[in-house]
Length: 168
Image 1: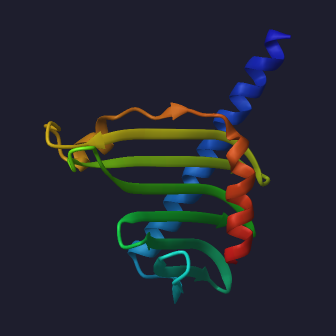
Image 2 (image 1 turned 90 degrees about the vertical axis):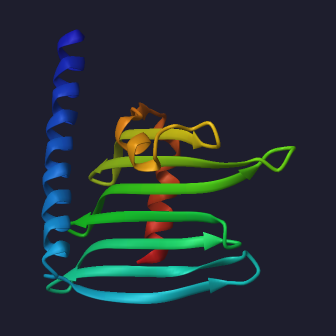
C-alpha cells in the first residue's frame, strides 16, 4: 500500500513539473509579445463589478485568460487561467479585500490561491493569506515572497473550472 502512495506522490510531482514548464513557456511568450491579445471590458452594475478579461492566443489556441476586476471599487481580484492542449492546467487567483475594523482602522486582507490541474482534475491546491495593517512592518511584496503556501482542500476547484468554462 505505501508503495502505491509513494508512486502517486511522485506522479503528482512529475505532473507539477510539467505544469510549471508550460506556465513558464506561456509567461515567456507573453513577455516577448508573441501572442495575439484580445481584451474585453466587463461591467455589472448590479453586482458592482468592473474590469477586463484579457485572452492570449498562440496560432488561434487559447493559452491564458486574465480576469481582472474590482467589486465596488475596493475588492480587487485577478484570476489567471492557463491553458495547454485546450485544457485548463493552472489557476493563480489574487484577492485583495479591504476590511474596516470597529474604529475604522484599515486592513488589507491578501489571499493567493493556486490550483494545479492535470486532465482537468485538481491535483494540488494551495492558499497563501496575510493581513496588512498599521502594525505591518513588511511590504506587500515582501509578505508575498515570505509567507508560505498552505495545502488546502481542492473541493473549490470544480467551481474554478466552471468559472473558466463560462469565460471562454
